[in-house]
Length: 163
Picture 1 (cartoon, one colour):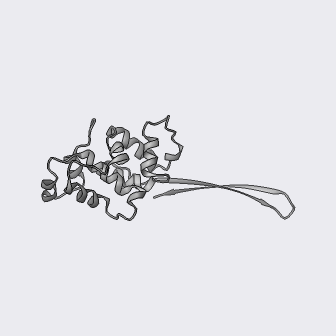
Picture 2 (cartoon, one colour):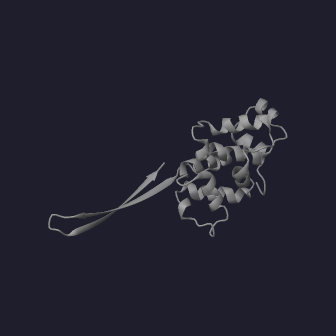
Picture 3 (cartoon, helix red, strand yellow):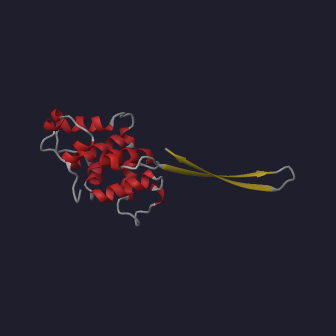
């Protein structure tokens, strides 16, 4: 996977039937990634099976993606898209400034804040067995409270969740 998404490889990773492969012959891996991004984005909320949704969309026109920002993100160098998805899967996407990663602004526009679980699903669909198996999410909360003797107590609670 050097500079483009290989449709045949993606279909192989996700064990796609020969019948469906035949319907998508001549299709574009980039278009498939575009539809996956749409299905996993906040705009695709309610789509329960992103892979099946993407295949159904591809069956209509195997070379056309979801359009707009989804096509732009899918057109990125695969390694760069995988890298920003890994960052998001770790729960760190809000900490990456556009100056630090060229896709961070577009990723946030497409996938939104808090996209860790969706990023992990995307990685699993794009990488198969090579995808990370879990994602970490960290939240921090601060609280001030006055004690019985009138002093103020400051509490910082950090919670880590591994999904």
